[in-house]
Length: 436
Image (cartoon, one colour):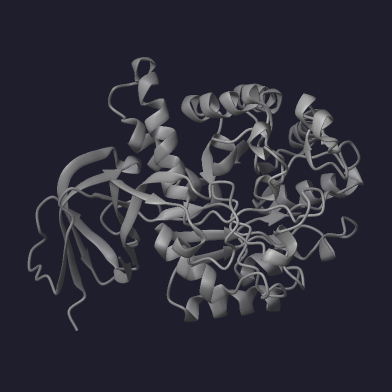
């Protein structure tokens, strides 16, 4: 069988290598062989005409819950892998808050094996930082890494005993592991369901103050100063928190951070009349916070955008706001919502280097920048790189409807929105895994 694939006439955007031009891409045996002109002896067994389309590295998503093992009633590997393909996501990182928790090498190996059998997106699990995510005793990080974990996290569970987090960071530093932290205080804002502000007060909803994020950040940065451990901060939500991250980076601390794509666009006002689709963790904050997130993406304070894909079933979502499970589906929205950020920010181009278009910057945040954080050799199309590619139409518009989503989780605050950017083909390891 001929393993040569030719993608021709597309606008190739590869931020890692500074390419943004109409040119051809040549793939041999699952690897990028060349861009521009065909390598010697190339004989296309398959060809995709990408005229008028963008050809980019497959997307790298820093947080996608696949709900297996343990929560198959919410979603299955099969449904969520199909969602990843429709969204152009070829590599995804899944948090450890499954049931059972990913705290044993056998569980990690089983998940990786089941995912690889589907031959779709590459799945890279995060291991639990503590046994059972209970925040008491550390997991065997070395064994979990050998089983395939690329970092360690507590997901949404907070370590109450700071000494445990200190030990975890010391251990991680010794072996060069990355600790992934969602900054939230163990006590302030516990039980809160909306951003502390006038809106939550008016609606009578328990609040989560910005202080919950900033106090946790102060603690994390002190521990980083003491240990030198590399920390990735997940799902930043506030202007004040981003100021602290900016200062920490300026100081030279080894920290990176991401934001969930829905936080780039939504504010607490989008809760509207108690819309449980807008119940997410961390909560949507004020317009000032949302604007700070957009600016921080632009100036590089925020390193990457993730989908924070969290499929929730009807039984847990179609409830009063306070009782509904937090979470939104995102794998199939990541590309379109990143493009929306680029479109909204095209007007700010005067302050930036003209060499990088807003679209190229948005693609960088969901490809190479995310890959670097996760320590993965993907997210770019240099010769020899894995041929993980997405081909999409940046102008094609589609409406976010439950029926349009492959994910078993049909709940998102963007239901009914019309978005630009539709995936036409997703290629994983040189194989066309999805074509619309």
